[in-house]
Length: 392
Image (cartoon, rainbow, N blue to C red; front, top):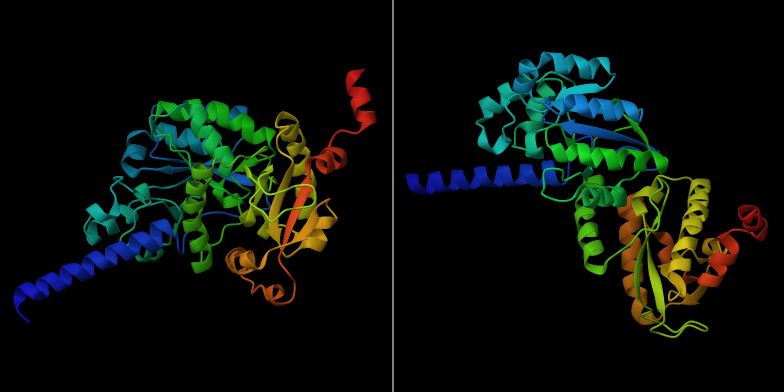
């Protein structure tokens, strides 16, 4: 083997190592702290890149809504503005590291990345842009730090309206979420002025990252993180909606003509809404929490149905028909053509979100579970007594 071949082989191995580090480290978040318990209304607001000219304004907004946060500071900027670092600390917020120079790992030699992490104070380290090299996790561990990422991006660096960014965050935030914002863009302040009251209104509690129950992601959780991007692309494509944004809201709805099979009184093509459950959230809930979440979610769906008289029922596919009937659902057999698809989908989500083998697939039949608008309005809508009191 000649020298050119050796050099080419070595370069290929280096590129492969960096590509794997990016896939496993940034995309999947393996070994990183990314989210906490999904049944917990506590979430963490995090701010990268500071301190900046916007820091004091951010602190005032956080104080107004009694929100705690975690600031991932850039070393050089922190040295230039020590008075802002002290104000962050005095306000009770958590201070962690975001690199000394704010350089992505792929643009640094290994020894430079070593210095970047060593000169960054704190127990947590968030790589700039989240970009990993093959050495990022190793160097962080040797310096006594834990990699910390996020599961919801604010996208406050984009040229978009603040309302659009907030709508997206409220759509995807869950209990235990770690939200990524930035200390620097003026748009962040506009986002916070809309976002903070909405989070409070929907039952979220904003705390420091060290107040969440955070555990490093394993391979299964890493696949969940990758699946988040797939879900968002799917939601954009089909126009999924959420009728509420409470911390325990568990449904996304896809408006569509019913694809079949024919249901009693509802033939194929009837306007309806396909239910997509928030599997990540439900997986961390107890049975009682799930029942309560269903009831509260249906109360929010009541107003949606009143505004959309064309929607005749909500439906999904499930092996838990008996439990669904207690909530007002009816069941109908699934055609054999859909049986295999339903089994595979159920098995995948059972393993992905619960780490369980769906043994019931071999004993219980798949069913269409559906609940009519009349049932929802009568079972979960305002009672006559409440309506009378409202009109007084």
